[in-house]
Length: 302
Length: 204
Image (tube, rainbow over all chains, first blue to last red; front, side, top):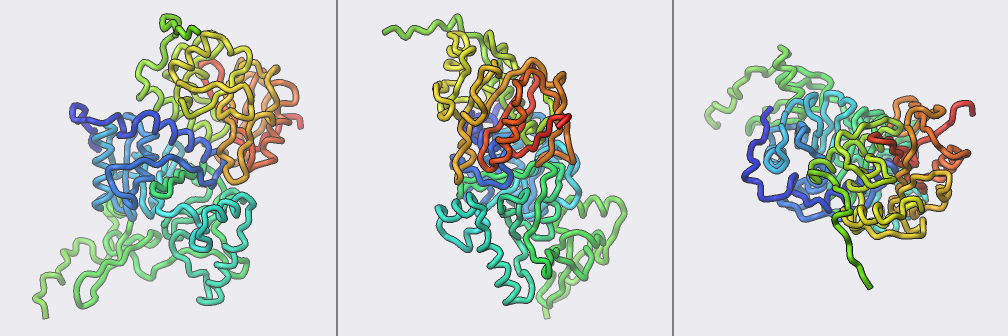
Protein backbone atom coordinates (compact mmCIF):
# COMPACT_ATOMS: atom_id res chain seq x y z
CA UNK A 1 0.00 0.00 0.00
CA UNK A 2 1.46 3.35 -0.99
CA UNK A 3 0.09 6.82 -0.42
CA UNK A 4 0.25 9.41 -3.16
CA UNK A 5 2.52 12.30 -2.28
CA UNK A 6 2.44 14.41 -5.40
CA UNK A 7 0.26 17.29 -4.33
CA UNK A 8 2.55 20.01 -5.73
CA UNK A 9 2.34 18.41 -9.16
CA UNK A 10 -1.41 18.47 -9.32
CA UNK A 11 -2.58 20.77 -12.08
CA UNK A 12 -6.17 19.60 -11.99
CA UNK A 13 -8.92 19.86 -9.44
CA UNK A 14 -8.90 17.17 -6.76
CA UNK A 15 -9.87 13.85 -8.42
CA UNK A 16 -9.52 15.47 -11.87
CA UNK A 17 -13.19 16.41 -12.42
CA UNK A 18 -14.46 19.90 -11.66
CA UNK A 19 -16.88 20.29 -8.76
CA UNK A 20 -19.96 20.93 -10.89
CA UNK A 21 -19.35 17.73 -12.85
CA UNK A 22 -18.96 15.79 -9.62
CA UNK A 23 -22.24 17.19 -8.31
CA UNK A 24 -24.01 16.17 -11.53
CA UNK A 25 -22.58 12.64 -11.31
CA UNK A 26 -23.38 12.43 -7.60
CA UNK A 27 -27.01 13.35 -8.24
CA UNK A 28 -27.20 10.64 -10.90
CA UNK A 29 -25.69 8.10 -8.48
CA UNK A 30 -28.34 8.87 -5.84
CA UNK A 31 -31.16 8.43 -8.36
CA UNK A 32 -29.55 5.25 -9.70
CA UNK A 33 -29.44 3.83 -6.17
CA UNK A 34 -33.07 4.83 -5.57
CA UNK A 35 -34.19 2.99 -8.74
CA UNK A 36 -32.04 -0.16 -8.74
CA UNK A 37 -31.08 -1.34 -12.22
CA UNK A 38 -32.43 1.75 -13.99
CA UNK A 39 -30.00 3.47 -16.37
CA UNK A 40 -29.78 7.13 -15.35
CA UNK A 41 -28.38 9.42 -18.05
CA UNK A 42 -25.48 11.68 -17.07
CA UNK A 43 -23.34 14.30 -18.76
CA UNK A 44 -20.29 12.16 -19.44
CA UNK A 45 -17.11 14.23 -19.81
CA UNK A 46 -14.08 13.74 -21.96
CA UNK A 47 -11.45 11.98 -19.93
CA UNK A 48 -7.72 11.66 -20.46
CA UNK A 49 -8.21 8.14 -21.86
CA UNK A 50 -10.33 7.14 -24.85
CA UNK A 51 -13.82 5.74 -24.59
CA UNK A 52 -13.59 2.02 -24.04
CA UNK A 53 -10.75 2.38 -21.55
CA UNK A 54 -12.95 2.82 -18.53
CA UNK A 55 -14.12 6.44 -18.76
CA UNK A 56 -17.45 5.62 -17.10
CA UNK A 57 -15.81 3.86 -14.18
CA UNK A 58 -13.18 6.58 -13.86
CA UNK A 59 -15.84 9.29 -13.68
CA UNK A 60 -17.79 7.38 -11.02
CA UNK A 61 -14.64 6.86 -8.99
CA UNK A 62 -13.66 10.52 -9.37
CA UNK A 63 -17.08 11.62 -8.12
CA UNK A 64 -17.01 9.50 -4.97
CA UNK A 65 -13.33 9.21 -4.00
CA UNK A 66 -11.78 11.05 -1.05
CA UNK A 67 -8.32 11.20 0.50
CA UNK A 68 -9.26 8.59 3.12
CA UNK A 69 -10.16 5.97 0.53
CA UNK A 70 -8.01 2.97 -0.37
CA UNK A 71 -8.28 2.31 -4.06
CA UNK A 72 -7.90 -0.92 -6.00
CA UNK A 73 -8.28 -1.28 -9.76
CA UNK A 74 -8.48 -4.55 -11.66
CA UNK A 75 -8.78 -5.46 -15.30
CA UNK A 76 -10.08 -8.98 -16.04
CA UNK A 77 -9.42 -9.70 -12.38
CA UNK A 78 -5.75 -8.73 -12.46
CA UNK A 79 -4.16 -5.79 -10.64
CA UNK A 80 -1.05 -5.87 -12.81
CA UNK A 81 -2.48 -5.30 -16.27
CA UNK A 82 -1.63 -2.12 -18.17
CA UNK A 83 -5.00 -0.42 -17.90
CA UNK A 84 -5.43 -1.23 -14.22
CA UNK A 85 -1.93 0.02 -13.38
CA UNK A 86 -2.51 3.25 -15.32
CA UNK A 87 -5.88 4.01 -13.72
CA UNK A 88 -4.55 3.20 -10.25
CA UNK A 89 -1.62 5.57 -10.78
CA UNK A 90 -4.01 8.19 -12.10
CA UNK A 91 -6.03 8.25 -8.89
CA UNK A 92 -2.94 8.01 -6.69
CA UNK A 93 -1.80 11.20 -8.42
CA UNK A 94 -4.98 13.24 -8.80
CA UNK A 95 -6.79 12.09 -5.65
CA UNK A 96 -3.92 11.47 -3.20
CA UNK A 97 -5.34 8.09 -2.26
CA UNK A 98 -3.59 5.05 -0.96
CA UNK A 99 -3.73 2.16 -3.42
CA UNK A 100 -3.75 -1.54 -2.80
CA UNK A 101 -4.05 -4.88 -4.54
CA UNK A 102 -5.66 -6.43 -1.47
CA UNK A 103 -9.40 -6.82 -2.04
CA UNK A 104 -10.20 -6.73 1.69
CA UNK A 105 -8.20 -3.53 2.29
CA UNK A 106 -9.83 -1.51 -0.49
CA UNK A 107 -12.75 0.86 0.07
CA UNK A 108 -13.27 1.49 -3.64
CA UNK A 109 -12.59 -1.23 -6.20
CA UNK A 110 -12.84 -0.28 -9.85
CA UNK A 111 -13.17 -3.25 -12.14
CA UNK A 112 -13.34 -4.22 -15.74
CA UNK A 113 -15.02 -7.56 -16.49
CA UNK A 114 -14.67 -9.33 -13.14
CA UNK A 115 -15.92 -9.37 -9.55
CA UNK A 116 -13.19 -10.30 -7.06
CA UNK A 117 -13.26 -13.90 -5.81
CA UNK A 118 -13.04 -12.77 -2.20
CA UNK A 119 -16.42 -11.75 -0.84
CA UNK A 120 -16.97 -8.02 -0.49
CA UNK A 121 -18.15 -6.41 2.73
CA UNK A 122 -20.33 -3.55 3.88
CA UNK A 123 -18.77 -0.16 3.26
CA UNK A 124 -17.00 -1.20 0.07
CA UNK A 125 -17.94 0.21 -3.32
CA UNK A 126 -17.43 -1.80 -6.50
CA UNK A 127 -17.27 0.41 -9.61
CA UNK A 128 -17.82 -1.37 -12.91
CA UNK A 129 -16.58 -0.09 -16.26
CA UNK A 130 -19.40 -0.67 -18.74
CA UNK A 131 -19.06 -0.59 -22.53
CA UNK A 132 -22.76 -1.14 -23.33
CA UNK A 133 -25.23 -0.48 -20.50
CA UNK A 134 -28.32 -1.53 -22.46
CA UNK A 135 -28.98 -5.29 -22.15
CA UNK A 136 -31.55 -5.07 -24.96
CA UNK A 137 -29.33 -3.21 -27.43
CA UNK A 138 -28.40 -6.34 -29.37
CA UNK A 139 -32.10 -7.06 -29.86
CA UNK A 140 -33.36 -3.51 -30.48
CA UNK A 141 -31.07 -0.82 -31.86
CA UNK A 142 -33.28 2.19 -31.06
CA UNK A 143 -32.80 3.85 -27.68
CA UNK A 144 -36.36 5.24 -27.85
CA UNK A 145 -37.68 1.67 -28.04
CA UNK A 146 -35.47 0.15 -25.36
CA UNK A 147 -36.41 3.06 -23.04
CA UNK A 148 -40.08 2.20 -23.58
CA UNK A 149 -39.40 -1.51 -23.02
CA UNK A 150 -37.85 -0.74 -19.63
CA UNK A 151 -40.58 1.78 -18.79
CA UNK A 152 -43.34 -0.77 -19.37
CA UNK A 153 -41.34 -3.78 -18.16
CA UNK A 154 -41.70 -5.27 -21.63
CA UNK A 155 -38.97 -7.93 -21.51
CA UNK A 156 -40.51 -10.65 -23.66
CA UNK A 157 -37.93 -10.08 -26.39
CA UNK A 158 -35.12 -10.96 -24.00
CA UNK A 159 -36.76 -14.27 -23.14
CA UNK A 160 -37.31 -15.01 -26.84
CA UNK A 161 -33.60 -14.44 -27.36
CA UNK A 162 -32.73 -16.90 -24.58
CA UNK A 163 -35.21 -19.40 -25.99
CA UNK A 164 -33.65 -19.10 -29.44
CA UNK A 165 -30.29 -19.81 -27.85
CA UNK A 166 -31.68 -22.97 -26.26
CA UNK A 167 -33.31 -23.98 -29.57
CA UNK A 168 -30.04 -23.47 -31.48
CA UNK A 169 -27.41 -24.69 -29.03
CA UNK A 170 -29.38 -26.79 -26.57
CA UNK A 171 -28.47 -24.41 -23.75
CA UNK A 172 -28.38 -20.70 -22.94
CA UNK A 173 -25.12 -19.96 -24.70
CA UNK A 174 -24.46 -16.46 -23.32
CA UNK A 175 -21.32 -16.51 -21.17
CA UNK A 176 -20.53 -12.83 -20.52
CA UNK A 177 -22.88 -9.95 -19.83
CA UNK A 178 -25.53 -12.49 -18.94
CA UNK A 179 -28.82 -10.56 -18.41
CA UNK A 180 -30.03 -10.04 -14.86
CA UNK A 181 -33.29 -8.90 -13.26
CA UNK A 182 -32.87 -6.39 -10.45
CA UNK A 183 -35.39 -6.65 -7.60
CA UNK A 184 -37.85 -8.16 -10.09
CA UNK A 185 -38.27 -4.85 -11.95
CA UNK A 186 -35.42 -3.68 -14.19
CA UNK A 187 -33.54 -5.82 -16.66
CA UNK A 188 -29.86 -4.98 -16.27
CA UNK A 189 -26.61 -5.75 -18.00
CA UNK A 190 -24.07 -6.84 -15.39
CA UNK A 191 -21.35 -5.42 -17.71
CA UNK A 192 -19.18 -8.00 -19.51
CA UNK A 193 -18.41 -10.01 -16.40
CA UNK A 194 -18.42 -13.77 -16.97
CA UNK A 195 -21.68 -15.38 -15.92
CA UNK A 196 -19.49 -17.14 -13.35
CA UNK A 197 -19.67 -13.84 -11.42
CA UNK A 198 -23.42 -13.27 -11.73
CA UNK A 199 -24.29 -15.04 -8.45
CA UNK A 200 -21.94 -12.63 -6.64
CA UNK A 201 -24.20 -9.73 -7.64
CA UNK A 202 -27.09 -11.16 -5.66
CA UNK A 203 -27.41 -10.01 -2.05
CA UNK A 204 -23.92 -8.47 -2.13
CA UNK A 205 -23.06 -6.37 0.97
CA UNK A 206 -21.17 -3.79 -1.14
CA UNK A 207 -22.57 -0.93 -3.21
CA UNK A 208 -22.35 -1.79 -6.91
CA UNK A 209 -22.04 1.19 -9.27
CA UNK A 210 -21.92 0.88 -13.05
CA UNK A 211 -20.63 3.62 -15.35
CA UNK A 212 -20.74 3.78 -19.14
CA UNK A 213 -18.80 6.82 -20.37
CA UNK A 214 -19.43 6.61 -24.10
CA UNK A 215 -23.08 5.70 -23.62
CA UNK A 216 -23.46 8.29 -20.83
CA UNK A 217 -25.33 6.08 -18.39
CA UNK A 218 -24.99 5.31 -14.67
CA UNK A 219 -26.80 2.50 -12.90
CA UNK A 220 -26.52 0.87 -9.53
CA UNK A 221 -27.38 -2.08 -7.35
CA UNK A 222 -27.65 -1.24 -3.63
CA UNK A 223 -26.35 -3.77 -1.08
CA UNK A 224 -28.51 -6.79 -0.31
CA UNK A 225 -30.56 -6.45 -3.48
CA UNK A 226 -32.07 -9.42 -5.26
CA UNK A 227 -30.28 -9.99 -8.55
CA UNK A 228 -31.65 -12.87 -10.59
CA UNK A 229 -29.97 -14.26 -13.71
CA UNK A 230 -32.67 -14.96 -16.29
CA UNK A 231 -33.36 -18.60 -17.10
CA UNK A 232 -36.11 -21.15 -17.67
CA UNK A 233 -37.45 -23.80 -15.28
CA UNK A 234 -36.15 -26.57 -17.54
CA UNK A 235 -32.94 -24.71 -18.48
CA UNK A 236 -31.79 -23.24 -15.18
CA UNK A 237 -28.97 -20.70 -14.94
CA UNK A 238 -25.56 -22.35 -14.63
CA UNK A 239 -22.07 -20.94 -14.20
CA UNK A 240 -18.94 -22.07 -16.00
CA UNK A 241 -16.89 -24.89 -14.52
CA UNK A 242 -13.39 -26.14 -15.31
CA UNK A 243 -11.89 -29.59 -15.24
CA UNK A 244 -8.54 -28.01 -14.40
CA UNK A 245 -7.42 -26.34 -11.19
CA UNK A 246 -5.33 -23.18 -11.02
CA UNK A 247 -1.81 -24.25 -12.01
CA UNK A 248 -0.22 -21.78 -9.59
CA UNK A 249 -2.35 -21.92 -6.44
CA UNK A 250 -4.44 -25.04 -6.98
CA UNK A 251 -7.75 -23.22 -6.51
CA UNK A 252 -10.73 -25.26 -7.64
CA UNK A 253 -13.47 -22.69 -7.13
CA UNK A 254 -12.10 -19.62 -8.92
CA UNK A 255 -12.52 -18.25 -12.43
CA UNK A 256 -9.64 -19.49 -14.57
CA UNK A 257 -7.87 -17.94 -17.56
CA UNK A 258 -6.30 -20.21 -20.14
CA UNK A 259 -2.72 -19.22 -20.93
CA UNK A 260 -0.96 -20.64 -23.98
CA UNK A 261 2.66 -21.36 -23.11
CA UNK A 262 4.35 -22.28 -26.37
CA UNK A 263 3.89 -23.04 -30.05
CA UNK A 264 3.25 -26.72 -29.42
CA UNK A 265 0.04 -26.03 -27.55
CA UNK A 266 1.26 -26.30 -24.00
CA UNK A 267 -1.07 -24.35 -21.80
CA UNK A 268 -1.96 -23.67 -18.23
CA UNK A 269 -5.04 -22.51 -16.37
CA UNK A 270 -4.57 -19.81 -13.80
CA UNK A 271 -6.80 -17.69 -11.55
CA UNK A 272 -7.92 -14.53 -13.30
CA UNK A 273 -8.05 -12.79 -9.90
CA UNK A 274 -4.34 -12.09 -9.31
CA UNK A 275 -4.83 -10.88 -5.73
CA UNK A 276 -6.82 -13.99 -4.78
CA UNK A 277 -4.23 -16.28 -6.38
CA UNK A 278 -1.33 -14.46 -4.73
CA UNK A 279 -2.95 -14.64 -1.31
CA UNK A 280 -3.46 -18.37 -1.70
CA UNK A 281 0.14 -18.95 -2.75
CA UNK A 282 1.35 -16.84 0.17
CA UNK A 283 -0.75 -19.06 2.43
CA UNK A 284 1.08 -22.12 1.12
CA UNK A 285 -1.30 -23.42 -1.51
CA UNK A 286 0.44 -24.76 -4.58
CA UNK A 287 -0.81 -25.86 -7.98
CA UNK A 288 0.75 -28.26 -10.46
CA UNK A 289 3.05 -25.60 -11.96
CA UNK A 290 3.91 -23.72 -8.79
CA UNK A 291 7.50 -22.65 -8.95
CA UNK A 292 7.58 -23.61 -12.60
CA UNK A 293 9.96 -21.35 -14.48
CA UNK A 294 8.21 -21.89 -17.81
CA UNK A 295 11.05 -24.30 -18.62
CA UNK A 296 9.46 -25.39 -21.84
CA UNK A 297 10.07 -21.91 -23.23
CA UNK A 298 13.81 -22.54 -22.90
CA UNK A 299 13.68 -25.42 -25.35
CA UNK A 300 15.25 -24.79 -28.71
CA UNK A 301 12.58 -24.29 -31.38
CA UNK A 302 12.00 -27.45 -33.38
CA UNK B 1 -34.51 48.11 -9.60
CA UNK B 2 -31.97 47.39 -6.96
CA UNK B 3 -30.40 43.98 -6.83
CA UNK B 4 -27.91 44.89 -4.18
CA UNK B 5 -26.73 41.84 -2.30
CA UNK B 6 -25.17 42.32 1.08
CA UNK B 7 -22.42 39.70 1.31
CA UNK B 8 -21.81 40.56 4.91
CA UNK B 9 -25.16 39.01 5.72
CA UNK B 10 -24.46 35.71 3.95
CA UNK B 11 -23.03 33.17 6.34
CA UNK B 12 -20.17 30.91 5.33
CA UNK B 13 -20.53 27.65 3.42
CA UNK B 14 -18.07 24.76 3.48
CA UNK B 15 -14.59 25.76 4.61
CA UNK B 16 -13.13 23.33 2.03
CA UNK B 17 -15.90 22.76 -0.56
CA UNK B 18 -14.08 20.02 -2.50
CA UNK B 19 -13.16 17.89 0.47
CA UNK B 20 -16.21 18.49 2.62
CA UNK B 21 -18.79 18.01 -0.12
CA UNK B 22 -17.09 14.71 -0.93
CA UNK B 23 -17.37 13.58 2.69
CA UNK B 24 -21.02 14.62 2.88
CA UNK B 25 -21.79 12.90 -0.41
CA UNK B 26 -20.31 9.60 0.74
CA UNK B 27 -22.62 9.67 3.76
CA UNK B 28 -25.53 10.55 1.50
CA UNK B 29 -24.66 7.77 -0.93
CA UNK B 30 -24.42 5.30 1.94
CA UNK B 31 -27.75 6.54 3.32
CA UNK B 32 -29.48 6.16 -0.04
CA UNK B 33 -27.86 2.76 -0.64
CA UNK B 34 -28.77 1.47 2.82
CA UNK B 35 -32.14 3.03 3.65
CA UNK B 36 -32.79 3.85 7.26
CA UNK B 37 -29.15 3.94 8.36
CA UNK B 38 -28.25 7.07 10.35
CA UNK B 39 -25.19 9.08 9.42
CA UNK B 40 -23.39 11.77 11.39
CA UNK B 41 -21.91 14.57 9.34
CA UNK B 42 -18.51 15.38 10.73
CA UNK B 43 -18.35 18.42 8.50
CA UNK B 44 -21.36 20.65 8.05
CA UNK B 45 -21.67 24.36 7.54
CA UNK B 46 -23.45 26.64 9.95
CA UNK B 47 -26.53 27.06 7.82
CA UNK B 48 -28.69 30.16 8.21
CA UNK B 49 -31.56 30.35 10.67
CA UNK B 50 -34.22 27.78 9.90
CA UNK B 51 -31.95 25.19 8.30
CA UNK B 52 -30.24 22.50 10.34
CA UNK B 53 -26.57 21.94 9.65
CA UNK B 54 -27.23 18.63 7.87
CA UNK B 55 -29.83 20.29 5.63
CA UNK B 56 -27.32 22.97 4.72
CA UNK B 57 -24.65 20.34 4.02
CA UNK B 58 -26.97 18.42 1.68
CA UNK B 59 -27.85 21.64 -0.14
CA UNK B 60 -24.22 22.66 -0.64
CA UNK B 61 -23.35 19.14 -1.81
CA UNK B 62 -26.13 18.62 -4.35
CA UNK B 63 -27.65 21.95 -5.42
CA UNK B 64 -26.30 24.11 -8.23
CA UNK B 65 -27.47 26.09 -11.25
CA UNK B 66 -28.77 22.89 -12.88
CA UNK B 67 -31.18 22.02 -10.08
CA UNK B 68 -34.50 23.72 -9.44
CA UNK B 69 -35.20 24.08 -5.74
CA UNK B 70 -38.55 24.39 -3.97
CA UNK B 71 -38.45 25.88 -0.47
CA UNK B 72 -41.29 25.59 1.97
CA UNK B 73 -42.76 28.96 3.00
CA UNK B 74 -40.93 28.97 6.32
CA UNK B 75 -37.62 29.03 4.43
CA UNK B 76 -38.48 31.81 2.01
CA UNK B 77 -36.47 34.33 3.99
CA UNK B 78 -33.73 36.61 2.78
CA UNK B 79 -31.22 34.75 4.93
CA UNK B 80 -31.96 31.27 3.53
CA UNK B 81 -32.62 32.26 -0.07
CA UNK B 82 -29.59 34.54 -0.12
CA UNK B 83 -27.39 31.82 1.32
CA UNK B 84 -28.53 29.17 -1.15
CA UNK B 85 -28.36 31.62 -4.05
CA UNK B 86 -24.85 32.71 -3.19
CA UNK B 87 -23.36 29.30 -2.43
CA UNK B 88 -25.30 27.10 -4.87
CA UNK B 89 -26.70 29.45 -7.53
CA UNK B 90 -29.80 27.29 -7.65
CA UNK B 91 -32.96 28.68 -9.24
CA UNK B 92 -36.01 28.65 -6.96
CA UNK B 93 -39.40 27.43 -8.17
CA UNK B 94 -42.82 27.93 -6.61
CA UNK B 95 -44.43 24.86 -8.21
CA UNK B 96 -43.52 21.56 -6.46
CA UNK B 97 -43.95 19.76 -9.80
CA UNK B 98 -41.01 21.72 -11.20
CA UNK B 99 -38.64 20.94 -8.35
CA UNK B 100 -35.55 18.76 -8.63
CA UNK B 101 -35.07 19.28 -4.91
CA UNK B 102 -37.48 20.40 -2.22
CA UNK B 103 -36.50 21.50 1.26
CA UNK B 104 -39.20 21.00 3.87
CA UNK B 105 -38.82 22.21 7.47
CA UNK B 106 -42.51 22.40 8.36
CA UNK B 107 -43.77 18.99 7.31
CA UNK B 108 -47.28 19.51 8.70
CA UNK B 109 -47.84 22.45 6.36
CA UNK B 110 -45.99 21.03 3.33
CA UNK B 111 -47.78 19.74 0.21
CA UNK B 112 -48.48 16.00 -0.08
CA UNK B 113 -45.64 13.85 -1.43
CA UNK B 114 -47.80 13.25 -4.50
CA UNK B 115 -47.71 17.00 -5.25
CA UNK B 116 -44.03 16.75 -6.13
CA UNK B 117 -42.59 15.44 -9.38
CA UNK B 118 -42.69 11.63 -9.53
CA UNK B 119 -40.63 11.41 -12.72
CA UNK B 120 -41.37 10.13 -16.21
CA UNK B 121 -42.11 6.51 -17.14
CA UNK B 122 -38.96 6.42 -19.29
CA UNK B 123 -36.95 8.74 -17.06
CA UNK B 124 -38.05 8.08 -13.45
CA UNK B 125 -34.83 9.76 -12.27
CA UNK B 126 -36.32 13.13 -13.20
CA UNK B 127 -38.26 13.21 -9.95
CA UNK B 128 -38.07 15.42 -6.90
CA UNK B 129 -35.73 14.58 -4.04
CA UNK B 130 -37.16 15.96 -0.79
CA UNK B 131 -34.93 17.07 2.06
CA UNK B 132 -37.19 16.89 5.10
CA UNK B 133 -36.02 18.42 8.35
CA UNK B 134 -37.34 16.77 11.52
CA UNK B 135 -36.81 17.31 15.24
CA UNK B 136 -35.15 13.89 15.59
CA UNK B 137 -34.41 10.78 13.54
CA UNK B 138 -34.47 8.41 16.50
CA UNK B 139 -37.14 9.24 19.06
CA UNK B 140 -40.34 8.70 17.08
CA UNK B 141 -42.52 5.63 16.74
CA UNK B 142 -40.64 2.86 14.93
CA UNK B 143 -41.36 1.76 11.38
CA UNK B 144 -40.06 -1.38 9.70
CA UNK B 145 -38.21 -1.07 6.39
CA UNK B 146 -37.60 -3.74 3.78
CA UNK B 147 -36.31 -3.63 0.22
CA UNK B 148 -33.08 -3.08 -1.74
CA UNK B 149 -30.20 -1.98 0.47
CA UNK B 150 -31.64 -3.66 3.56
CA UNK B 151 -30.51 -7.02 4.86
CA UNK B 152 -33.77 -8.69 5.91
CA UNK B 153 -35.25 -5.64 7.67
CA UNK B 154 -34.38 -2.35 9.36
CA UNK B 155 -36.10 -0.04 11.82
CA UNK B 156 -36.40 3.73 11.58
CA UNK B 157 -37.93 5.92 14.29
CA UNK B 158 -38.48 9.34 12.76
CA UNK B 159 -39.97 11.96 15.03
CA UNK B 160 -42.26 14.81 14.01
CA UNK B 161 -43.98 13.17 11.04
CA UNK B 162 -47.42 14.39 10.11
CA UNK B 163 -50.42 12.03 10.53
CA UNK B 164 -50.73 9.52 7.68
CA UNK B 165 -47.24 10.36 6.42
CA UNK B 166 -46.33 6.67 6.25
CA UNK B 167 -49.44 6.06 4.14
CA UNK B 168 -48.10 8.67 1.70
CA UNK B 169 -44.74 6.91 1.68
CA UNK B 170 -46.47 3.58 1.01
CA UNK B 171 -48.39 5.12 -1.90
CA UNK B 172 -45.12 6.57 -3.16
CA UNK B 173 -43.53 3.10 -3.05
CA UNK B 174 -46.57 1.46 -4.62
CA UNK B 175 -46.17 3.39 -7.86
CA UNK B 176 -42.51 2.44 -8.35
CA UNK B 177 -40.75 3.19 -10.88
CA UNK B 178 -42.39 6.55 -10.30
CA UNK B 179 -41.93 8.30 -6.99
CA UNK B 180 -40.02 10.85 -4.98
CA UNK B 181 -36.96 10.06 -2.88
CA UNK B 182 -36.64 11.29 0.69
CA UNK B 183 -33.65 12.52 2.68
CA UNK B 184 -34.40 13.19 6.35
CA UNK B 185 -32.19 15.52 8.36
CA UNK B 186 -32.05 16.52 12.02
CA UNK B 187 -29.21 18.52 13.50
CA UNK B 188 -25.98 17.01 12.14
CA UNK B 189 -27.55 13.71 11.14
CA UNK B 190 -29.23 12.35 8.06
CA UNK B 191 -30.92 9.25 6.72
CA UNK B 192 -32.69 8.44 3.47
CA UNK B 193 -35.70 6.56 2.15
CA UNK B 194 -35.63 5.94 -1.58
CA UNK B 195 -38.86 5.06 -3.36
CA UNK B 196 -37.75 1.41 -3.49
CA UNK B 197 -38.16 0.96 0.28
CA UNK B 198 -41.29 -0.66 1.68
CA UNK B 199 -42.30 0.89 5.00
CA UNK B 200 -44.65 -0.60 7.57
CA UNK B 201 -45.27 1.49 10.71
CA UNK B 202 -45.23 -0.60 13.85
CA UNK B 203 -48.73 -1.53 14.90
CA UNK B 204 -50.03 -1.83 11.33
